[in-house]
Structures are given as C-alpha cells and as structure tokens.
Image (cartoon, rainbow, N blue to C red; front, side, top):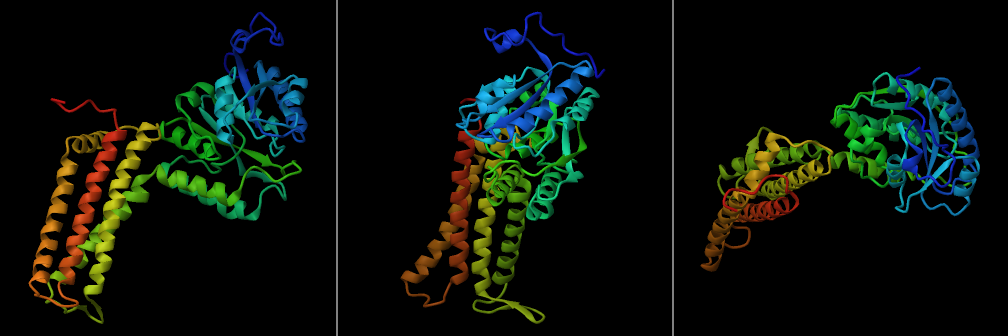
Length: 414
C-alpha cells in the first residue's frame, strides 16, 4: 500500500443528487482535458479504467475526470455513459481545461494525460507510486521510454522538445529531461499552491517552471508515446506553440533575455564613444589593421538606446513575474523597486535627458551661428540624442513599474 488512503465516504459516489463536495475526497484523479475527442475517448477511458483497477488493488480510491472544453461531438455524453465524471470548462484553451480540472478534482493525487490516445494511463500508476514516496511532481519521460514510430514528428523529436527542455533547464534548473510530456502526475495541493494561470499550451512549461522555482521535489519515469488516434489535425501547432513556449520561458528569465544582453550593449556603446571622443574630429581610431570612425558612433548610439530599453523592460518583466508567482520577491528586487517608487529612477532619467539636451543645445547653437556645415558635430549630435532618448525611456519605465507593483508599503509621508 502506498501511504494512507483517504477513507471513502459513506454515501455512494454515483448518486446524481450529490454535489462534488458531498461525494467526498479520493486518493487519485485521472484527469483528461477534452475538446471533441469522441473518437479517441474510448481507448483513453479503457486504459484509465484499468489504471483505476490497479490503484484499487493497492488500496487507493480513484476517479476518472473529463474536463471538457466545449466539445460538440458528444464527448461529454459518451464519457458519462462510461461512468466518468465530467466538468465543463467555459474558458477555451488546453491549460484552462487542466486548471479547471485540477480545481474540480477530488483526488489528493492527480494523473494528467491527453485524451488523444497518445498515452496509456496505466503508465500513470508508477507515477502515483512516486508521489506516495514523497515526490510532488512526476513527469513521464518519452525519450527514456519509447516513442512509437509516427508518434512524434522528427522536428519535434530532435529539435523542438530537446531545445525547449534545454532552455527550461538552463534558466530554471528543473532537471527534467522531457519538460513537455503530456502525461504527468502531481499532488493536487501542490498544483493549487503554484497558482497556475496559463490558458494555452504553455501550461506545460508553467507547471514545471513554477515547481522548480518553488523547490518542489520532482522525478521522472519512462513512458511510451503512441500515435495520435484522432482523424483530424491535432490542436497542437508545432511552430506556433513552440514559439509560445520559448517566448514564455524567455519572458520569465529577464536576466538572460534583457539584463545581460543590455549590459553588454551599453558597455560596447560606452567603449566606442570613449575611443572616438579621444580622437580628433573627423579622424579615425586605429587598432592595427582595424579602425573605427564616426559611423561607428551611430551604431554605438543605437546600442546604448537598445541597452537602456532592455534594462527597463527587464525590470518590468521581473516585477510582473514576481506578481504572477513565477519568481519570488528578493531583497535586491525590493530595493530596486523602492528606489523607483522613491523617484530615484525618475531623477536618473531626468539627469540623462538633461545632459543630452545640453549637448544638443551646444550643437544647435553652433548650427545657428553657422559654425559647422554638413558632417560637422556628428559625434555630439549622436551622443546628445542617445542620452536624451535613454533618459526619457528610464522615466517612462519608472512610471510603469510604479503602476504594476503594489507589494511594497508606500514610502514614508505618502
């Protein structure tokens, strides 16, 4: 027996007059999101029923729950005819159906799997054993198990899934080899504590990312991926959903997407500017066979402005991620946000903009008195413009951060 099973309620579970709450808790819920899956539901329910029997042999009570996402092919009626419980999710999306199903589940453990006949729910039984051992999340790994020929396109198998799993592990150190498997098991209370919000396919990444950030205990077991049994195209769109997953992961790691590249760009811009301003006007700086002239300062100005944009957007992304529960609040973040709310960022931006205006004012003065012709004062023009635009960006970003962050107490005297 795996741990202490939840006692079954005295009332019968099949009484239609009872509410879900009155039916009482169970040990395991086998959860399937469903959208027009009438063709594949029979085989999915067959393996799920066998999994229920195996769980009951081990002393665990279980249910099969279908979270329907608006099927119009009779999936709900068929599932009920097989004795499954059906809950209706009115918000469209793969993730929305699963979040709704997790909330409606009666089991303390949940085995989640797609209802397209690509997974055998009997393989969820060893996953429940892992949860009973003390793990919070158990992933099914298709790459250490078996991928039946024709079950996964080569692009997904050799590029998409390994790349996305690699990015996820690089950014969040989850240690999961198959982060986008459709068959996984987890503790219901742990999943609810993660406050999952993704309504689309990126739900698969969100669950693993938040579990890793929360320090949940995770493991994997080998599973088999079977060919999709539907007679139509799958809901998954490899390029669209792959990009959404990657965008989701990058947005949750502002250090890699924004901060580090932006600091590199600003550093290069400052280096080019210092070198050029130490050379005579219209001259070039030589480094052996390599040289840089005023045209490089134009590139430096663009890099500086892009770097400032990246730093400000990275700050906004970091605050957003902390508010959505993807990352925790840190002292460093709190100090940075407090400095923004105390208008230090506004003052910094205003200082940059003021210096830029002074430089541009000098250029304008020389121009009005006819002090330079075509091609004159290019360096000062680029420098002043970069500082002015960068300062305005910092000011605008500070306003946005102040609007979206409300976790810190108001500054004294406010």
